Image 1 (cartoon, helix red, strand yellow):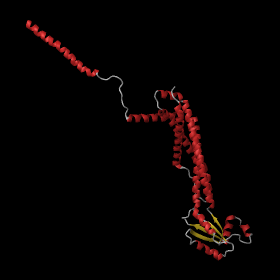
Image 2: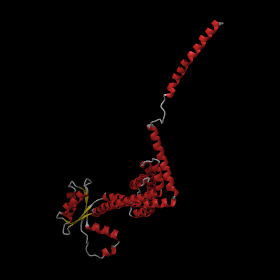
Image 3: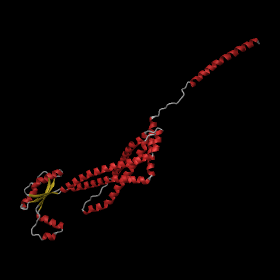
Image 4: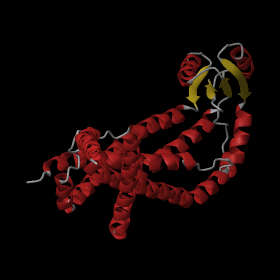
Length: 353
């Protein structure tokens, strides 16, 4: 009995001695859990997530700005109409100048120099002069028209046959029609006419292209005027859009202050107003293209009828689809420019108190 108590006491002692060791092992196992750092953890945003967020905000800004533009249809239509008229005026003038240039190009092809011969020149000498002129390198051809042939042609075309029959003498001189070489430009043809005027057999030289040269000079002047007027109108479009965006900024001043209070950057606040300027400009470009198309439709029929009366196949040509797209793109660029100027100037002055 005594032996069993001693044995049991040693076993109880071993169990009591093993408990602290087990506690130390469990504490050792719990130490790593307690050694973890506590507090706020930091994480990096991936580039793809930033880009997706940037695209999403652009998409939301574009949709919201379009909704705000369409929310007031009357004011938006009036703004689009003003921008469209300002863009359509220089575009219409440019189309008119382009058609005039095409028309003058078709008239330039049959350029001729008329040589009116001396009245005292013998008919035999006058008939030999075209052959001498055709030997020149800068002359493509020369034809002789006698005074009798000229009188018959004038009687048939003028309608004054009775008046001409009452004349005792033929007042028309002999004529030589000179066709310049195709390689000559306007300056070369003018120089050729001056050289032919120095011939002793020639009394007077008439260059049929002189009025076309005056027309070309007027067209160059018209192009300069179109550029000047167009530049002023485009500047007016930028100012109109800038004022429109400025009013939109003032109406949303409280909203801008709240966005900046919660940490919104200037780029974040600027983005919806830039899209508003873009929508105003694009709408104005669409209105401008429609106005130019309406203007051409209104003038096409009378111009075609007038061309048929003169035996010409000239047809009025518009800017086409690419020209209309150019107007839309130009309007959008002007809208962005006006919005950027307005936002850059007025947004910096709006800061939380």
